[in-house]
Length: 485
Length: 144
Image 1: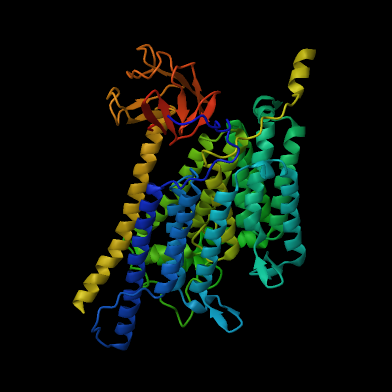
Image 2: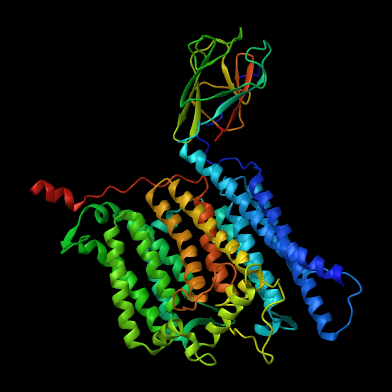
């Protein structure tokens, strides 16, 4: 029996870090790695075969090397490094999110390596980076951001306590874009500060979710219970809805002025979804839909570019070589893909040296994937987004308080809704609005913003995180009113 | 040439198949997770016997724990330990919020966490060793 020694201090202040195996994550990541290697091999072999067909020479040796084996390897190693960091940190975070996101990012990487590298180029000194290499760099940075957030965020106080600061920062960001931004394709989305340029609306969606989650969780009882009747509609008391609607209106207004319809649609959908999650009242959603339809009609009447989008959606074949060109080509691409697709690398022949779908790497990656992987591949990709949303909602259901629940639901829904909006737009289910396909599209801002959302989700999923602060005591006005009655 | 085209086909379909293998594996984990959640909260932990000189309880046996679990020689305890060095009411394990605590109930030979005697209610983490009499346990996470 051991000698009398000091008893360990009762509640340990700093939990000792113990590596913790994550078998599910490791197994799934290995499947991701296998899929990406097979996909890369298929892409490399297809390109070699097409070259041989074009020149008429016979293929003597089997070559299955991916077009950029080192890039693919670096990406897979990056995923495994994040996994290793999670294992060493020993935190009990979600094990599904990283592989699902890794698979989407890998598919995006394969697509960017397969598209003409001259689509986007950037040179740093003597170093010239093409589309695939740039995407790889952004993917690795995003993975690092995701891992850092997932490991370092142990308390959410910095998010919930400063909700108005975050909202103000978001509005400031938008205003800066409006004043200093540069126009690309008629929309003022890009903000350049020195050598760095980005699309603030991507970051804004995360800020919006944080603000809405903090605001709704604090005022949820009021919004859910107290109501003001306006005909058949039950509305919450106006003073409590006003800051939220103001935040929404400012975001929406500036976004409309910037002609970023996709972001506006995304913000509004997330706003309604979170309102519903917080209150569970269908009347809010119905009211929001009515507002949305009325707003859309006004926008259609006022803005020419909205009319163009809607007309293209209704009948892209009216002007197949002009306004409807992208839509028509995307539809042809989906049609060529069929059930199983033509194979990675075999789709999208250039027409007279140009890509048939000019924005294929940002707005239309789904058209390229639909052509090369077919309906089967697209359904698998949609399945991956569903998995991310399911994990987010599970994390929300297991969350310890309302702010975390709303934040988790909002972060996963923002990814899911964005994927839906752009996928439905590409497939001509709704008018096309130019936003990126999360984790697949080319673009640093998009990848980073989605990595931040995923990193926060992972941090929220930790079963050992710092418990949330006790709810603030608050005198509801309802009580005094009841006392008066 | 034909072999190459065939291999290309295999690779193409293999990529799609692997995507679905991935989704299938994920779906299996998700279903398991949802089933576990539907069953209600899992047991908060279990005690696994690491060493037991008297052989009762047997080494390797594991006891699912309640939120309040008493350990001792008496048969009325949640975990009954038939060991001569164990008092009839030896120790009490309580799950408070998200942390297990152990306290000694005035036992003759003491309760030890990782070899150190317990004098006041002490937090005990998963994977820690708990010694009661001559029987050594390990506190494990409950099975989902």
